Length: 168
Image 1: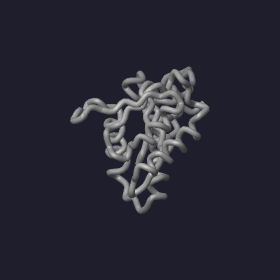
Image 2: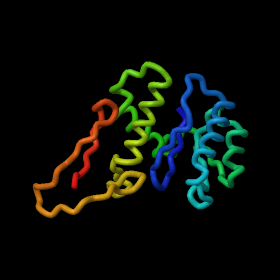
Image 3: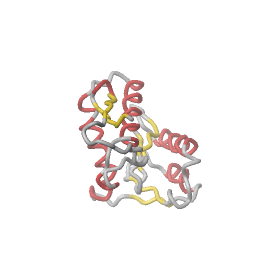
Image 4: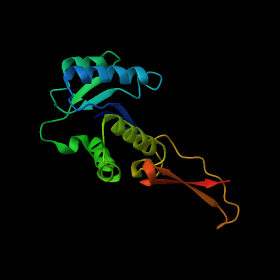
């Protein structure tokens, strides 16, 4: 799985899934991601690309991002704390989702990841963001009488994850 996390907002983007990643595959996924997100990318928001030293991240991969004005930064060797945001996201994905679901194929994995990322970006609170999700706070209705507000539960991933919202 190739994913991108916006450092400031913690928004996650899924770039691609494959059982056998190669350098050429990573380059194509980077191109596809930039085409999909071109209206969201601004020069101020996407200035750096930080990635590890995996052989799949070739010079051509870096050139895709350099072409839009981004600077590539490689994580230092044997410095696991240099990529903590990505490591934390992987742990959340595994603990909250993948360790609890039997994946039966690449299409199933893509559907699961898309649903989880939608939950993560749109509903899951983040401590760094003052308990708001990366896509911004949900609209809250004013409660006129405490204890009278109705709550609606929305199940995600077949009931594995529950989202709650207030009903008018």
